[in-house]
Length: 376
Image 1 (cartoon, rainbow, N blue to C red):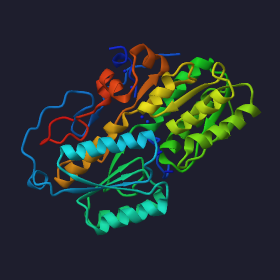
Image 2 (cartoon, rainbow, N blue to C red; image 1 turned 90 degrees about the vertical axis):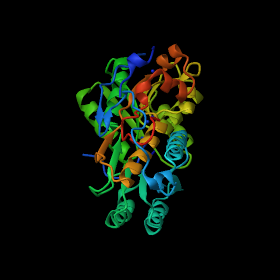
Image 3 (cartoon, helix red, strand yellow; image 1 turned 90 degrees about the horizontal axis):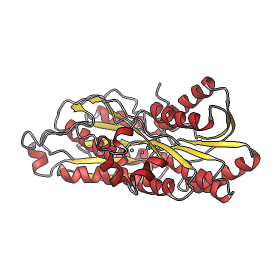
């Protein structure tokens, strides 16, 4: 989280992909045992997702060749495996493009993030990437950046302006694919605990799917809603989940569509000795998440995610293209994939690098492809 307040895959797994800060998860207004299934091909502004990207087709613009481009990356959150991997991808892409990436984080403080964005505008960054955020506090500064003619890229946040390029990972599909597995495993009936915090754009979109899922599957009964987002989300959710599980001893599943939520749910289930009774269905992926899912007896049986590192790369490429005045679609979609615990075990997958190697479509070099750079 896709976030994570505002939002993550496998030839055993390659044939089983389906469409992560929390999305990873962001703040803002909502946008209007099984194996993985294949995700449909998707096209983006510069090509088809998952296809082999060509090498560089022309020389870099002088400002890139000379290392004169600065892109400000203004983040709402930085702690958590998802966000660390997202940043690592962005930094790697910036280095590849000979771009200076000026990174700031609000550390969960929306006002601090807004001030960081104001500073990036005042310093006249060549482009700005806004990674998650709360719409009410971030949009005024985004509009200032747009008015100043600074190219803008937004991930998992509603920028409030048509001038920004928006990167998404289809949060409705993330939730739907996880819930398909939950339905199959429960037979469409049973008590479920739901983990949700309103105000994060990815979580709000995933919540829309959950609400519709309950209407379509009346045998699924939500008996408790828990959730908190802070710098220790997993441990806080674990405490809440323990209380909810003790109050509702017939629960079959926890739907926790953000990986920090899911890790907290797993901690609670393990501490209460309920691993054989209660299963977890989540979202997002990281190497640490894979470790949790693959450990012996883990109740976390399915997650749906993009590769956060790849999304970070896409964001930097989009910003670079805008600086170079190249055409970029206003909406770029990075499709997520379903990952089950069984798929990880069958493939011997222990980290995200192995996951991406098993599912090349998780790397999307043709989404915002930079024509003067070789494929990432």
